[in-house]
Each structure stands twice: as structure tokens, then as C-alpha cells.
Image 1 (tube, rainbow, N blue to C red):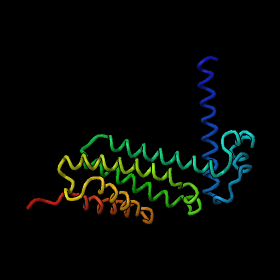
Image 2: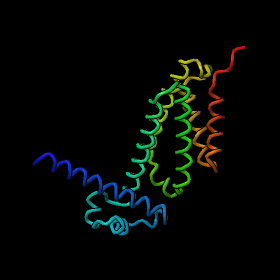
Image 3: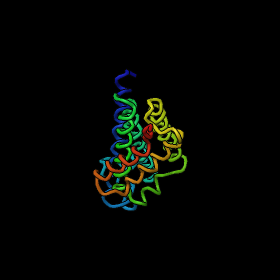
Image 4: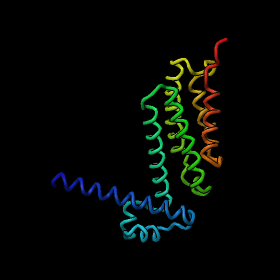
Length: 194
């Protein structure tokens, strides 16, 4: 089989999978988790039910796959900011701001039913570990630059950041998110020498 044929089949499958995920997310956002049925998803995505079942066995599996894709996308965004240009403190602020924005948007778009469905123990634990490692690594860099408080280890401060910034989910504006980030950054800063 020619290589181009393999590539086009793979890209077609990826496009169909993405259409299924996007359609399902859209239906859930419009009408809630209970409104999304396999028939409705297939119809709205413009594919047959048999095709849909080749990709996913049920709505729950689609939603879990959609959520895993979002988490991977968010981790990639945060990693890009972590590895970006600038001093460690600037990159920390960029990562914290983006994480708080993600937390705020997630709470605005995810209903309780959807969160309960897609947040499975093993998946959540892996995502939390990746996030903690990301923050911990960046905080270690900040510590090496002398700007991080020295009385708490970077791993513990990473957990502090994650939990503190998760509160952005209940904030009503981007300005409030920025204030939360500033307060969290202030708590991390090395105290001035007297």
C-alpha cells in the first residue's frame, strides 16, 4: 500500500474522531450530559451510527476521551510556557496565570454531571502528578535564582499553587483571576533580607 494512502486513512480517522468529540462536547454544552445519545451524536456529526460505534462504544467513553484530550492540551500549553523564554519568575507567573484561566473556564463549561463522569481516579491522578511535576520543576528553577522562599520545599509549594489557583474556578472575572495570581506569587516570594 502506498505511504500516502496510509497517511490519508490516518488523517481521515483522526478527523472523524475529532468530529465525534467536538459534536459530543457541543451537545453536552447545549443540553447537558443526559441529552447526548449515540443516535443524536451520529446524526449531528454527519456519520452513521455504525461508524460511530467503530470509534466509541458509548457516550461516556466519548466524554472521557474528550476530557483526556483537553487535559493533554492544557498540560502542553503549560509546558510550553514553562519552557519558554524569560526568567524563571516570569515563566512561573505565565504558567500560574494560564492555569488559573483554565480552572476558571473549566468551571464555567463543565456541569457537575460532566465533571463526575470524566474525572476518574486513575486519569485524575496522572494529570495531577504531571501538573505537580511541572510546577515543582519551575519552582525549583525559581529557588535556584534566589527568588523563592526557602522555608518550604518546592514540591510542597507546587501543591500550594495548584490548590490556590484552582480557586479561580469560582471567580467572576479575569481581573479577579489576575489578583489571585498576584496574591499567590506574593506568598511564594523570598522575604527581603533585613
